[in-house]
Image (cartoon, rainbow, N blue to C red; front, top):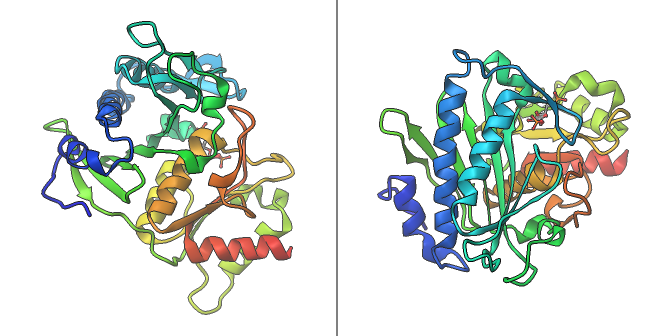
Length: 335
Ligand SMILES: O=P(O)(O)OC[C@H]1O[C@](O)(COP(=O)(O)O)[C@@H](O)[C@@H]1O
């Protein structure tokens, strides 16, 4: 298992390269690209209140959401950084209608990895100085090297992920990721511009007492969700639980992973498939949750078993401490 002596993220990536199935150093270079882009975006997020980077960019993205200027900037920085690494053959992003094809420098489509990103998660919180994040998911392509990347390379079930993580731009900036051998968190020392291992081997508590859901949608929720929320609020045993909802998936997830809790974005009569996107929000968070002894489902099945059919498809999402997600699923099944 990993030891704390590998203090910086760079050292940690190299030191653990061999624990990775296709260890050729390429994934390390990809992760180092994400590390670099995270620092650049962190710098922009931190000074957001001072420069004209807050507010709408005047455009809407493929989801019909108004794009924030920081969304656009974060999208550009991650795409640019990943393009230059000679590893990535394609990128899909919340801010891009279609996937982006990246050819290797020799123009022979030799790159092997696809990356899916939510460049700035929690965008409704940007203007009000509440923590936001970036989410990333990495797969090995399934179409032959030497040919251009196709949609098929992106529409892989979450269980095929080889790496996933998030960056949280909060009271401190952290990068949390997994390559399938546990979850580790690194905190940025802004004075040195270096990420240090601060949270080795992160684990969800088996059970918790925090529930995170937008209760403003309560009347639109399925009966099973209403029943589970009532269960959380009932004066019985270690309940009522505490309600905490920041409105940034990354921030709510991070808190619940440390303290024990459940995050829910169910379907509703307003949003028949929920709001969160399977490929670059739910799957990466599900991979991290499972690697940290947590659980992630759509209320009925393991999220990472879902076979995607569209780049920007949405799914209901229940994620957190194992016992709490199982209890929520119980209410969904019995409703
Ligand atoms: O405001 P709502 O409907 O509760 O949605 C909040 C959820 O949507 C998100 O902001 C995702 O959407 P964005 O990636 O567009 O920000 C999550 O981070 C958050 O948990």
